[in-house]
Length: 109
Image 1 (cartoon, rainbow, N blue to C red):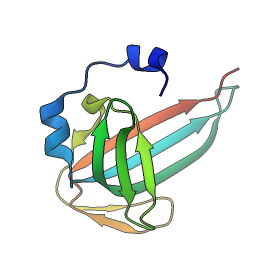
Image 2: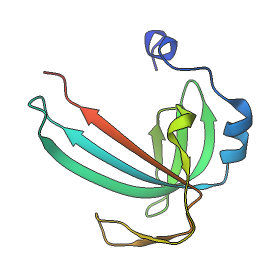
Image 3: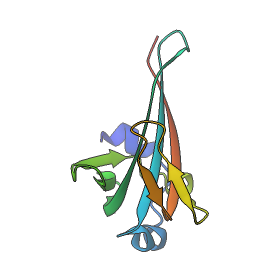
Image 4: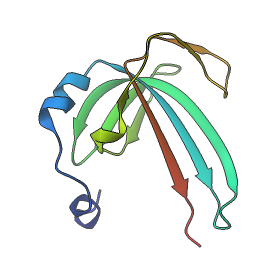
């Protein structure tokens, strides 16, 4: 991440970051085109491998093990209620994730 990008982020909450290591996060991403219309949606779950201001939140994808990177804005990772969550993309079921997070990605106009 660039220094300019990091300057816009709140300081990393090291205590929360440490608590999140090894936990499962259910992720929802909505992509918007330059016209503001939804271009796609994606859902996946992953286990938190590490968190830093430089890399963000690094997850090991539960489906294929590949690393995925999310912003280190830890206030966007909310505790999940226990239960079964069916992913709309792929249809798999995630049981009792620890955190939920959603992100909206907007294309530049």
